[in-house]
Length: 256
Image (cartoon, rainbow, N blue to C red; front, side, top):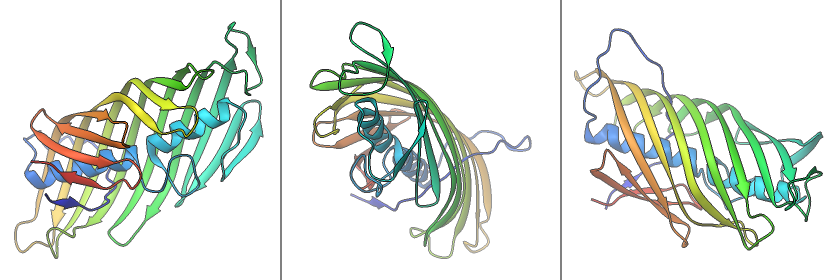
């Protein structure tokens, strides 16, 4: 099993590049990009975490009238917070079991949520600009499990100093659309129970500094994530590249 480092990557489209089949290294980087968008470390719903899983946990709390650590109430159903240089904003509309719109609190049964992230991430192995938006519906908040469905998009532009190819520097741009299908979270501990998500990704990469083999490429990838009750997920790229994702840490491991 090969460990893949935490890499954030994003996308731009160039007219002079044609789409090609991803290399094994590009599949690995794409897997890590999706892993980063899904879970960026820490436990869900705290100021030490990020990604979709943490944002879902945040919105369960906010829908039930509980403000998570690191989140500020802005009024009129709007909330903001930040982590690792990235700003998060949430806008919620809450309804009771009878469908009456009201203040988000213990009687909320369903909610609609708009989510946005933006900012700059800097770490030892990458510098990245992040932009992500999403719209979700949450149902069953008055029960033991809340169910998410909806769509989002993300763009990451990054310079990656590879730990797999010493001396190589890769710049990536990824543009992705994502759909979430019956993703269930416990309303008690806000952990993911099951459900799935799919991503359609378009990418451009430029690799330099690896001898004389500088290269660029554009490629498309389809990804499927299946969430598990043990707070892991399986990630499959193009139906053939298999990975395992830890939703607490954001670490992804190649499984084939």
